[in-house]
Amino acid sequence: MNKVIPVAEASKHFSDLLREVQEGQSYVVTSDGRPVARIVPVAPIEPARLEARKRLLERLRSQPAIDIGPWTRDELYER
Image (cartoon, rainbow, N blue to C red; front, side, top):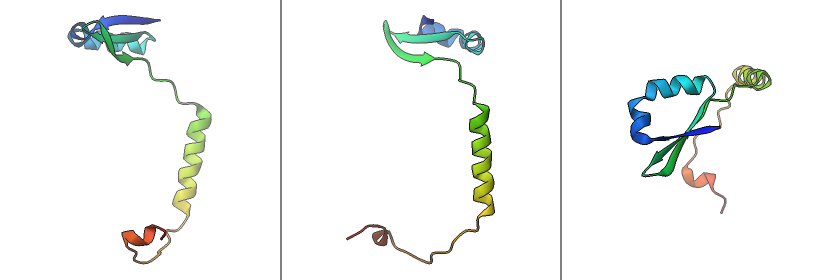
């Protein structure tokens, strides 16, 4: 559930607000009564996603760089 907090109050108690967000609380920050921001906990990174990233980086590091020679910006566009 989102708690609503005015921007001045959020600014004044930002450290406390972040501590509560770490514990799972979400906030909607308002300015002149209108929502302007949402502060929510960061979703944990899934182990499968971390493993996929690790494998991709290992693969990229193992592949040699290819020298395609000099080129111009205009050569990148089909005519």
